[in-house]
Image (tube, rainbow, N blue to C red; front, side, top):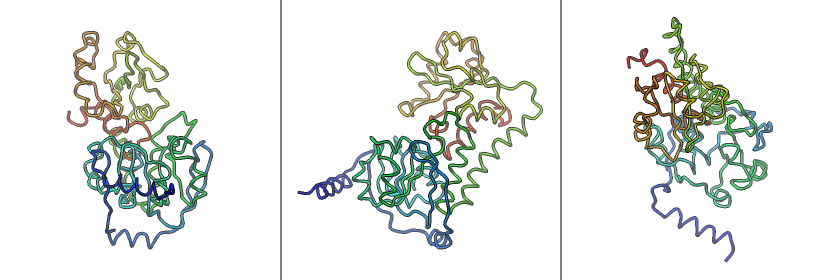
Length: 338
């Protein structure tokens, strides 16, 4: 039997399977408003990058209709733009419960979802016209390079903040990501609404704290076994602290000891939680609050340790708003009545 027929059989069996992280069904209808917006679409030119971080210009004559989206920022940004019905495969989300509640139904309507990536042959059979992901998505061992897909008439789009060699992550990059996708799909107005929500939150904090002389001393860390990794000024989290005018502790450090953490004594401590620990936030906080070595910390005594999901501070897309609001509430609880 030829390989192509074997692959078709495997795909059919896969689509028939029932699993917590894999499901399949097809969207049958597209709202009339979407059809009207597509009809009014004007071709756009998007300045993006290839997997090496090199500039890449792509022209979209019409909005994509069959999209493969990889990683949470790609999927949720498309859902927020109102084009979830274009996604034929969404990969990289640990569980549907980590999708924003207002977009969960749209996520569950995606024909194929999985934590793991499909192989290249299966994706080819889905006949996508656009693949959205990170720079690493298009590595040889994952979905191959952007040139491979261009040679098959498939557009590729890479989140700017994920570019290889990009050492400085900013809110502006996430806004550009949302804006680019909005233009690609003819949803520029909706993209600006999403960007505006972030800008408005930052402006609100600036207004409410304008007369504040002493800024909160904030530390953002990730626990890697016994190692404490601080998030510095060049991270997205660091840019959020800058935008919110916090005193960013250990902004140039690459690691911290427990003794250094205690000496820094932050007013607010933000702990980045990676995918494997999603859902375990309460237990993680309890371990920190109950650690005898940390009892002298102001943030422990004032109960000002906050967890931040990784998806809100790394190539975050629309979830950059979540990161901004978590930091804002933790830094200035008084302006939110907390």
